[in-house]
Image (cartoon, helix red, strand yellow):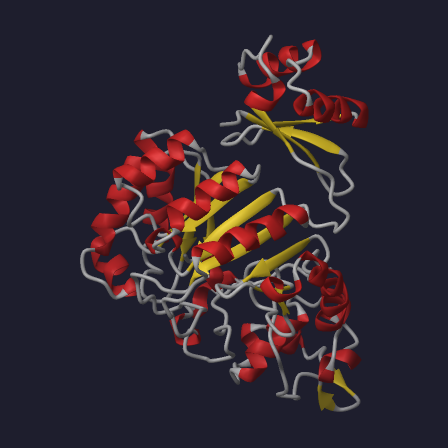
Length: 400
């Protein structure tokens, strides 16, 4: 089992990473090639790496075979460094704001998962987010996580923590540390938490999982999800995060579902609706992509159509994803003539979802309030046509 990973990464050169640690190091291409050679012929750790490992992580690796202490990943020509994968859309919660719409317990068989993970590795994916639904209830979660980890991926998990206390999960995450575990928080008290997720006793399971993970020393951060059900408990959720000494982000903007349904929008706490930062583009489809439970690759979690069947096309299918991204991100319909689109707050595929859901414009277009969105005497967002997309994660997708 490796302690370090040596890998090419996009245009950033070559990295050495330690699973479970945010600290990495950049190395010259010559050092990377040396490690590839030493790993192939069972050579020992070079002096420069031994010194760097002690200084960076307190690891003592002198005189050990490179291939036993680290995974040296091969170069990829596909240009992808990150990906997310929904193992299964099933969940043990029924959150009022969930962006997934119908949560079916469907996922790939084990042989298909192995095939997909090799495709992700060959595409160059170093950082992989495992999500859902709730990934920890997936029947093949442990095997999938371990296989991805052994291939040399830095894994993040998005979870509601309700299963994080289980001994077999804790043992897995101790022996194969995750890069990050992101836990969604739905309230500061049992009353509001259980009401939001519509499961009695859910808060107690969440708190048990969070406590067990903290005591195990796992690397975590919290997403504090605010809806009209728990919007009086923001301070309490912040206090909970600070009590555990964990970094946190507050998410309060609800998105339509991935099917373009407005089912999630009534959960919005209108007083806490935040103006988004101007959307200036993203790497979706170019250096990042998303995979659904059936192995269909899309530019992100919102822009799901068109997509690519990775199990049928293999890694070569990703060559088309950049072109799909360029088409989805382009301003279309009424937005294409908007005179202030350079400061628009919402990416185009997410706009399409809001339109499809027939959402009030103030949910996604702050220009509307200032009257700046009038083009040739017409509301520039009047066209209801749409498909689907977003940035890497829509606001409501912060929930596991």
